[in-house]
Image 1 (cartoon, rainbow, N blue to C red):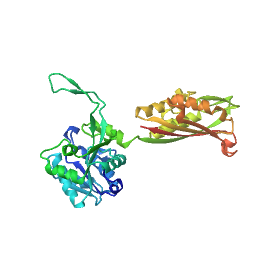
Image 2 (cartoon, rainbow, N blue to C red):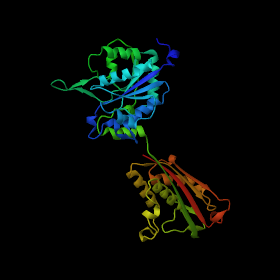
Image 3 (tube, rainbow, N blue to C red):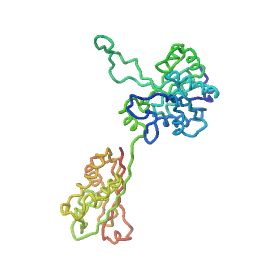
Image 4 (cartoon, rainbow, N blue to C red):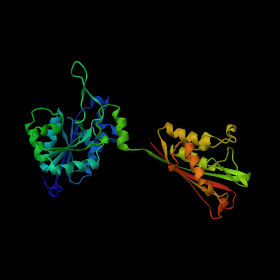
Length: 386
């Protein structure tokens, strides 16, 4: 068993194989140079490696003649080394090992550039695993049914003992260099070269975000896994004055009062502010752009129509309402007894859980037009997620 305390002070080298043409990923430049989440695919893995202080050097193996192109997009760090690879993956890794040799690493991580979803957790687990093994790799169970079609008819394959091995794969320096010295041909992966030598190999948990980009449709999947959700924040504010009446409408709830709110529609200032917040988050103008008060068709209209329209615009663009917060400013009528009903009505109108909707009320301490009981103001904030 290797000593855990001694292993914590290791020097690590990293090799990122980026010499392939990526022809299956579609036409255009090689997949490792295409943008993903605003950065070239290759850059994601390099940045992840550079975050670890124990990694002394990151060698990027590129195609013949591709050094300048890679250097132009990679971080300007003395720890990043770009070298030409070879015709096969094995040849490229050999070139990477030669470039690492002057740094005298204790271990090496070998990674595919086409797997940009590399996390610090994966790296930590791999390096920790080497404290008791000669090699380690992340792996996922096989979820799909497997069939063997090599014979005259399909044959089911037992998947219970099968795993999908990912990269990076971690090796003790002497183990991987010895394996490459004796390797006669190209291997499926680097782990295959050390398996035959009797080296101790362990598997660490794989990750869905470590998927390999192979086909054109993989880019959209990787974008969602790596970039995470897109967030949009919007705010809305609306004011309505009082006029003679017997109730006000706020968040679709009728609140008895000695006056009502003046407006072209039902004057629901709360849902107007919330509608504006959603439209603002989408950068689609304001409620007046979509429902102009000069248009007679909106005379006396229920504001739920406006709110649902804004929510549909968000949904059509792949967004959902992650959180909505409404603050009603009023001296009278008292809002607190109706807050829960307003919360439930707002959640129902938007098709979301009441748990993501907040309705609050406050006064202005008798200050301003609200304090003089001339009207009601509402502020709303919304968070959209995609």
